[in-house]
Image (cartoon, rainbow over all chains, first blue to last red; front, side):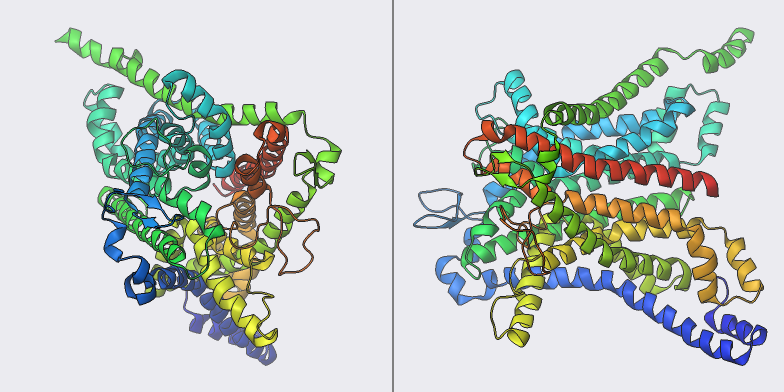
Length: 327
Length: 309
């Protein structure tokens, strides 16, 4: 980090005997080359994911074989007489993906409506109001929530949350968008919390002292100074929570009921993009139209989370730079 | 005038209604989130505690997975995460060392690596499953079969090794971020001192910087194991099996897995009420495994941060 590799090895040459200098020059270059090469693995992974998920999705657009069964426009247009339907295993397979996207959207919106107020409010509590002694414990405990495997949350939603939701809302189907959304909220609360908390913490303390010096009460300081300054970061936390929610698989597979119905009801069973891939890829014939459609769904999912995550990171980065804190 | 002047400091000491409401509301939100954690843990522990026994963790499933234990799933999970760790931890640590120690400031390559790591962390786990199937099994595995096994499907099928490699890419960012943080926390004076004494860059990194950062590396490794042990979506198509009468002994064997076992029992069983105790037991074992690892990681990190602070 400090000197360049050249001056280091020059130093080594002066300080040590000739044998050591030779050996260390070899080691120096070798070590640097190896860590540099290995760090490219992450770049390679992203590129390979893009290529290999994309490669299996592409026949939807290019293969005449696939076009005999499915015209790309049919992914979005309603089938005559059947409407917008996802029914890949039937005499006339129907591959309309709109119900799946609506399903993902329904579940995600429920999760965000529950998780955003809770997580942002608790980030505010931890940063602004909590006694110092409590603060150090709350944060790691909320982070623990992120450590629960999603299949465990899905199981909990399936067995416990579904019963509670049934009792309180009396939904038509036991497993529905509401149950899956509540389950998802468990998974995204820690994400939204920690990004919001970082954003609040990034507000320079001079803002706070200045506001208090001008006679603001704690609530005035929070609402008129801290929150407006941290708002981009809080927005980013919502964006990142959204990205996490649309990509979450095991919770929705277990808790949403998985019927691809196209409606706005939260009490009805629903099927998301991720759950569709998880449930159907295992049974599909490799190279069939259905197989390629599932990869196309994966590619769309990958691209949307990529866009969402990059947007979220840009917001955080911009805010940090404006506030003059951290890297 | 004097009255208002006197009122200002009092406001600071005794909060007004708005302050109290805000504090109350935000504290309530925090309590709800903590309660979410408590309720999941409580339900799983209460539901699963009764079934935990030596037989449960040491025997194989019997009678169409309605009786017996989950030993093969525990074994498969441990084997999978071990293999994953062997790949992910060295790769992640090396990447972090490059980023923190070797990359020149404003390096373009380092910036690209960082962006890729951040994006890798945001890729949905099911997409890793698709990738593992399309790349490792259908491309790499099949190429090995054609080259070495006369086209017989030997590696071109779901296997322990492919699931482990898929998971290692998924957990790579966990290791990198944690190690990087630990490396940045090592005071610059230590590096300068070491270099000033005539040590080379490599000697400085391996004998001065890394020993200081070992807590962070350990944390990253443990978090990666915990994450990998709990993931299901990436391994559903790359190697996990519903049920196997034998334990995996080769890299190209399929394996049972705790998380996948939960998914199978919860969705595929014809009689959920009969499998429910087993289901709770399996969830509890999985949760204990991942959760204890997480707590260990958090404690190590807290200690380590305090020592450097």
